[in-house]
Picture 1: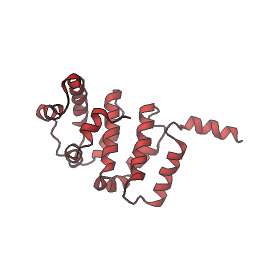
Picture 2: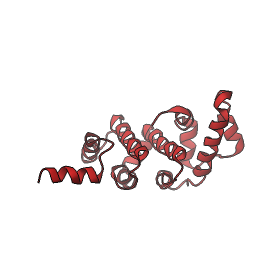
Picture 3: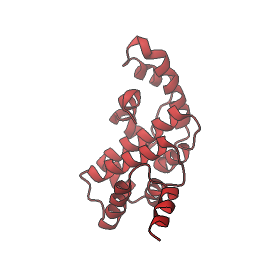
Picture 4: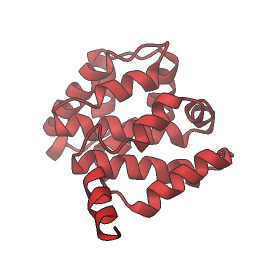
Length: 171
C-alpha cells in the first residue's frame, strides 16, 4: 500500500479523531476543503476517490467505529478498500486509539485471519497494520505480541493453502 492521497487525508488527526468519536462531517464542504489541498492535475481523480470513501464512511457509527470499518473492507472497489485499510493503519498509529484497538478481539481476529480476504491488497494491508501495531510505543501484551510476531515472520503472502502445502512437505 502506498501513502498517496489516502495518506494525505486519512492520517491527519483532523480526519481520524472525528471518525473515531462519531463527529464526522461528510458534507460536500468537507470534501471541498480536503480537495483544496491538492494540485489541479489530479484533483478530479482525487475528488472521485474521496467521494467514494466518504460515502462508505457514512456507515461508520460512533459506537463501534473500528468494527464498522472492518465490515466496510468487504467492498469490491479496490480504491475504497485500500483507503479503508489505510484508515485502519492510521487509526492504530494513534496511541489513544491503539490502546482500545488492542483490546478489540474483533480487530485482532480480523488482522490474523488469513482466510477472510485472500486478495493481495488485504494481505499486504493487514501485514502493514500489524507492523504498525508492533512498532508502536504502546505496550502490547506478550501473548498478543507473540501472535503478531509469528504473523510477520510468516509474511504477508502466507495463506492457509501455503501452510497446508508446507505441512505436507514435512510429513
